[in-house]
Length: 311
Image 1 (cartoon, rainbow, N blue to C red):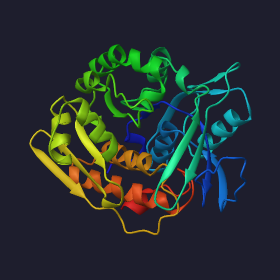
Image 2: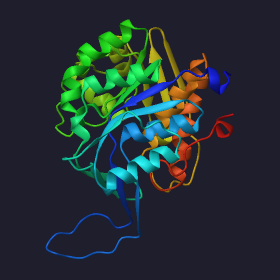
Image 3: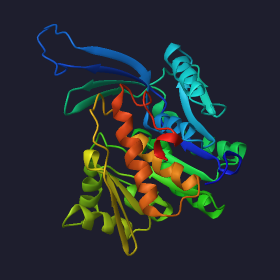
């Protein structure tokens, strides 16, 4: 394993919003009915932000390029990122647009997310270019594709430039609120690693005209170019590419909150790559263990994995 000084820097691009997590009896009853929930938490949120924190905790020099508002929630997000060891010099503060906010209704076996976009859709490719030059990152991870339509439209040109410069790219689209899934397939030849969960895999597979098992769908998406590393919840995950398929189980844990588990999975996998682990099975083991451990506490970053955990 490389020493920290030799671990290449990673830049994460995407959303920086605050999560308000409500747990218990969270299915709303309208008609002005008041109901009591078990607990709440105001925590760092946003797929990109959680991935960045997970990478930093795993010893990877990590910066975030994103946008927040000039408000209390934006300051909360910046403080939490810095406390986690994430570089924030590339996070822009917008004086006129509020920070995004997600309200997460977390039940025992499912969750719903209500998001006020705020500054999330305002990130531009120009900011990512500037951040790559400033940080010297050798890997770019893009998160929450569908929440950032302006950046999404600019990604084909940006990623072509990035790949030409020798920087590798990973993409976690997250869910498409419009359920249209436009634009991703044409982007896949410019992506080294695609990181969907099972629902996202199936949705993208439907757009690609893929049929058959989840594994067959993953191979179809991999045929566009990227390695496809799939998050399968309690079942762990699997990775497919040209001529190979690898699986790794999750850890049996007493789940407290699944918020951000997929993002911690992403961080585990990308950290393994950054630390020079070549074996795909071991990379996947880092990912599944990191994802499992993150469910032991509330919020996306309350119990992210350390290097000692993964060793």
